[in-house]
Image (cartoon, rainbow, N blue to C red):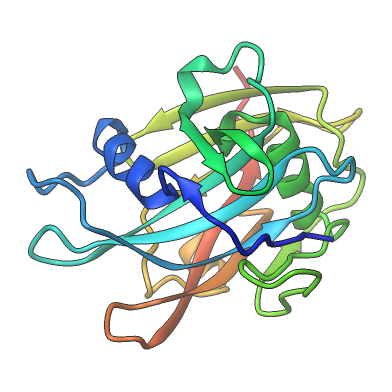
Length: 225
């Protein structure tokens, strides 16, 4: 189960993200340095207990309207081979030592567990409390026959989010769209995700402290090449 250490990280996650976010293709730049606050999210467990997995919502209030971004993060005790392009930064953890922090959409452990969540094979955990399932995070998948283990994955960043194309077992490939800008009007209904096979829905906080909810990820068939 996810264990949360009450300690420091230097530099902090928000500090690292403030430098990283403006360079992303889906960032809605205001022309100002991001002013980030933590808005919510959840965690998943790595079955091997080696990789920290967090789905973080952060709100940028540097522009005229606040924008909440969704950033999946993976935390590792050593560099992930071949993933230098996805490295957000390194940080000194007060208990675990140096941690390499990645954009988790490029980390096969995080993507496998996200798929497991969608398939109902992983239990979401509270973001800031140890050993505490988070029932507010809901997932749905409409078909059977898919496996959470991933044999291949391909990641594409675009202006509206990140598409992770995965092949799991003998079933046809799927594309997980990781929504990068969270929108309160999104609901758990497929009205906002036409032709979706599945989705992950979770909460976050608005700047005034009100709780809202929307789609963190949507799963569709991968279009044939």
